[in-house]
Length: 119
Image 1 (cartoon, helix red, strand yellow):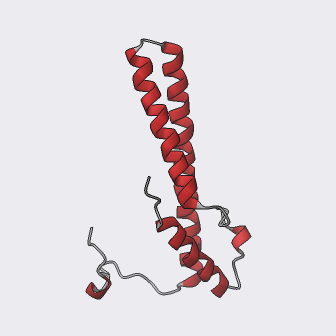
Image 2 (cartoon, helix red, strand yellow):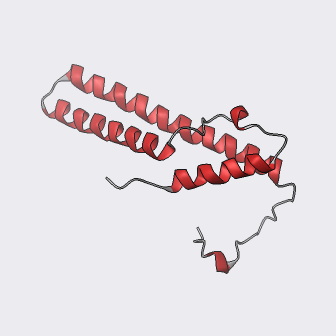
């Protein structure tokens, strides 16, 4: 399985931002930036996929107990992923507000030379 490197690169940037700021300690953020987020995310996605496969197999076998267990697992793994992204959102907002005091114009567009896709 291909390992995602986006989170690893983000962690480097977040640590660099924290190093620039005297007002925030990395330990005060929600997420533990010593953890390998790429690996954690990959493992959670694998667990979620396996629970979804279990649900399908249990439904075909008409095994209500196994299906309920699968749904419980799906709930747990989606909550873990949701919490991860919620904490990431909170940390991102905190770093952004601490580092940048300029106002963001309503119609700001990232300059073309960054090759950032427009959504």
